[in-house]
Each structure stands twice: as structure tokens, then as C-alpha cells.
Length: 229
Image 1 (cartoon, rainbow, N blue to C red):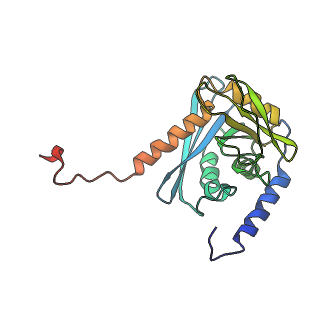
Image 2 (tube, rainbow, N blue to C red; image 1 turned 180 degrees about the horizontal axis):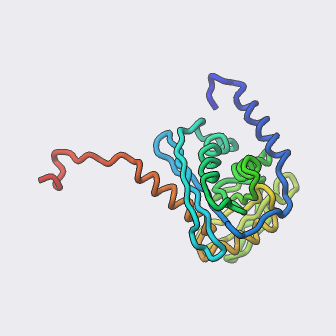
Image 3 (cartoon, helix red, strand yellow; image 1 turned 45 degrees about the vertical axis):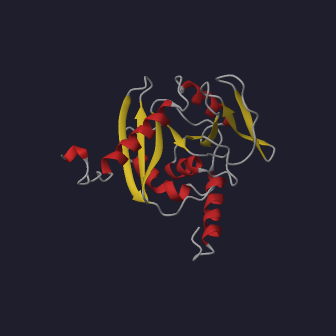
């Protein structure tokens, strides 16, 4: 948070509480057009990439958005750093996703309002959060590929630790909005296809990084560069 605004955190926490109050953890989704959204960074710029797939995993559409980061990275407040460009990127998809995988937490968040929940409520869209670490709560480490263990926070199951691929750390799967905890896990398993991350997440990650490369300044060769001789 910016030290010049001591009330900023209080205001952001209040926004998260309003988001959490609107989260629905009941199944209201379909898999007709499943999408993913992920972010890359270039300096202070946030590059959001979104991809929507058909049921046969064919890419139907991609979209992107580039914006300056509104805040530095602060654990628990990712929505206010990445939320705006991610929202605009997803809104650029046609067809509209019927389920969105998000690189970030869902209700597995100290105030039950991670990036996946934020995007789900703002967009009115079913979302699943996929993260590489547990922001809050604890789970036992799964022993077999495909196995999952409940992520417990304040005596509630808010997600699962899922061993998605041999030799990798478990990923954390949690509902964001309009999907139940168990359905979030079930759907995620269907979209792994032998990868560590669900296919929509991987494709969104690749798309965001392609945009990053395309806007990155090209290195200038020095006079001593052998390629100039």
C-alpha cells in the first residue's frame, strides 16, 4: 500500500467484503465456452491475456488488455493490481465464457474475495481460481497424481490442494463465483490433460506472454557485438 494514503487498505478491505457478500457457491455454470485469463508484466504495465475454448478444446477467441498497475503487489490485494485489465480482456471475448479459469485465488482468501471471486462478481460469470500456493488455510499433501486434499480455513473447506502432475507441487483449486467447491475440483481435473495447470490457464498464460514479447523494446546491439562486424 502507498504510505501516503493510510486509509487505502481500509477502503480496499471494504470493497472485498462487498464482493464476498455477493459470492455464490452453487453450481450455475456450463462448459459450453470455457475460458482462462492470466497476466504478464512488463515494468509497471500489466498485460492480461484471455482465451475461450470450445468443448473440443478448440480456441474460439483471444483477447488482451494492457494497463498500468494501479498498485504494487501486496498479498491479499491482487484484485486491485490485476482486476481491471483482466476484466477488460475477458469482456473482449466473443463468445462470452460460460466458465472462467483465473490465475489467482477464489474464496481461499482471508476475506473470501480473491481475484477469481472479484472477477466472477464484477463480470457476473462463473469462475474457478487456480493458484500455486495457499494464501490461507492448510491442506495435506496429496500422494498420487490426480489426488486432492481439502484446503481448510477457519474450519471450512474453501478449496483443494490437487497434485496435477508428477514431480510438481500441488496446485490450489477453489471456487470463485457461481460454482461449488467440489465442482471446481471436478471441472479442473477434466481440463488438466496431463499438464500442471488446466488447459485454459496455460493458453491464457501463453497468450499474455506473447503480447508481452510483442511490446517489449528490442535490445540495441553495441558496437562490440560480433553480429555487427
